Length: 413
Image 1 (tube, rainbow, N blue to C red):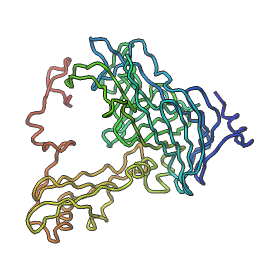
Image 2 (cartoon, rainbow, N blue to C red; image 1 turned 45 degrees about the vertical axis):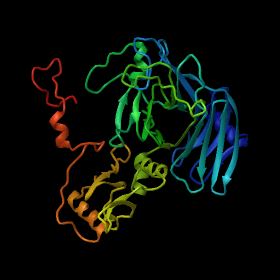
Image 3 (cartoon, helix red, strand yellow; image 1 turned 180 degrees about the vertical axis):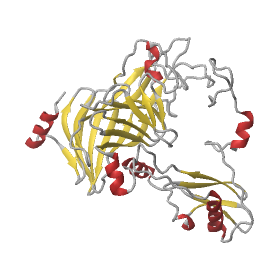
Image 4 (cartoon, rainbow, N blue to C red; image 1 turned 135 degrees about the vertical axis):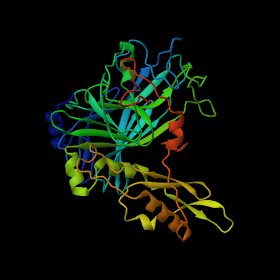
């Protein structure tokens, strides 16, 4: 592959197409049959060399345990994903006065890499995938982001339902010895990603992150590479309850097209950005992806019916919570979701926010109805908001680990 020295030389010679603003720049360096090699200079990192490409895993289709809706299992003998799609070309243009775009086209997809005029966060990524054509072989397609010279030592990080970032180590688990067969190496290292996957260079401390706009599976199976699953088409049921293959098409019988949006962040120091702006670059990108804050409150009309209306919680503006969403459930009953402000991975300078949930509930009611409530009852519910914590504990399964004689100090739940 092209070395960093050669990238700099080509840049000086003006031999590469380039988009940029005052904070970052992106330059085409090499074009390959299945991928594109770019030189990306981010807001605070002097050099990196990302390469983009679609790849896929052939699905395991034998009857003992095929890959399906709930089971991700590549074909036996698969050690890595294979190139998917043939590179057809690229173009560089201004979409508007404030937005510059690289368009990378293959016979399977189109990837748009964008830099906005005032964007000091990162690189916007939009993927248009044409879908997986009907064949005899199931396929699971990933978007891959390589960063040459990046050594993450088999470690990466994923968010936990948008909460605290979790450290992942390839072929390891934090609380027990993981024993896997060769055929399970790939699927054993895939994790759910609700908002972000990151890896950190073990020597330089730089971090590379991809932020997604929906839940995906992902991993950093190979050194210097992040991958996320963008589409799957499978022809066998995995015997996990769906009782049908994951073989979806549109109403004309054509493959489902998939469009995703994301951000690529390249940071020399997460702490430096957080110190300067008061929040992490990851949180800034998440807010960009959300586009608008979806906030609703309960209001009671003259006839006693509940309506959901968009509303800025004026009484709450002094509470430093980045994401607070309120949803009506029943008469005089609402669900409040409080977004996690930061954690020590995204912002090493974090100081956690504490607030009075009962006072918050009173403020919400008063904002909606113009008067304080007579009384307030607050109950914690599960993440899915389907039941209270007290209700869940009544039927929660408690079990003993094999080597333990009594209930463990922590329960496996």
